[in-house]
Image 1 (cartoon, rainbow, N blue to C red):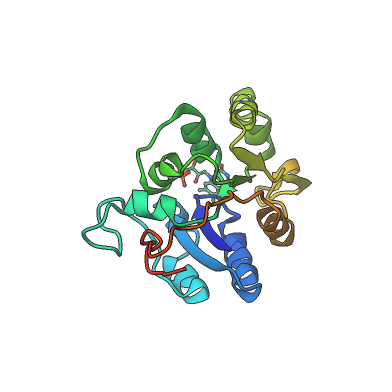
Image 2 (image 1 turned 90 degrees about the vertical axis):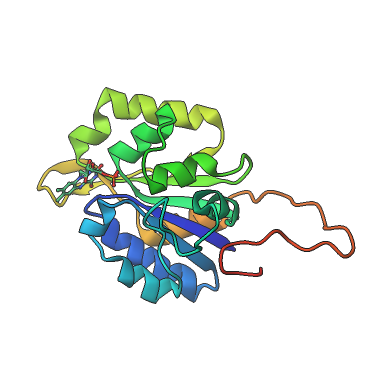
Length: 199
Ligand SMILES: Cc1cc2nc3c(=O)[nH]c(=O)nc-3n(C[C@H](O)[C@H](O)[C@H](O)COP(=O)(O)O)c2cc1C
């Protein structure tokens, strides 16, 4: 399965590394796109080593020079996962804001490609009416599926809902996401180029 992992800037970003490792060991292909803030928590080189592919960090300076990277990257995956999904990226997604590489790629994902959201944040942030409204709004669109955050003692010291679901649970949600049925290619036709892969 081709998985695009979008990492935003929360303390749980390190768990996205574990998810990457699990996914690769399970035989999936995985590409990573990170917000600038996410790189404050985990270095892109960690994902590059785990996934074996350069991380997309900038809309204007991606690894596929000359291509419109955010569109090519958005069209490559069979499933997209946002792990962790910050309050900020959820707000951008709910409002159609595309002002960085992750929000822009997410906006360019074709309809029919499942997008899994794994929010993680402080309990007060998670329970904030605006965040809850954004989650309801995104859920009602039908193209987003949420792996609910779990309740436990958070890195900030608070206890309550907001911790990232386990990477094992997130991977199992990814693996069971309904994949778009693609019509067989006519004889002689080739699949459209995906970034750095032929499958
Ligand atoms: C130490 C630290 C931990 C943070 N953890 C989270 C978090 O778990 N969830 C969250 O939504 N924001 C968290 N933030 C705030 C985000 O980093 C901030 O909202 C940022 O603008 C998110 O940017 P991005 O969505 O573009 O990655 C944290 C900030 C710091 C300094």
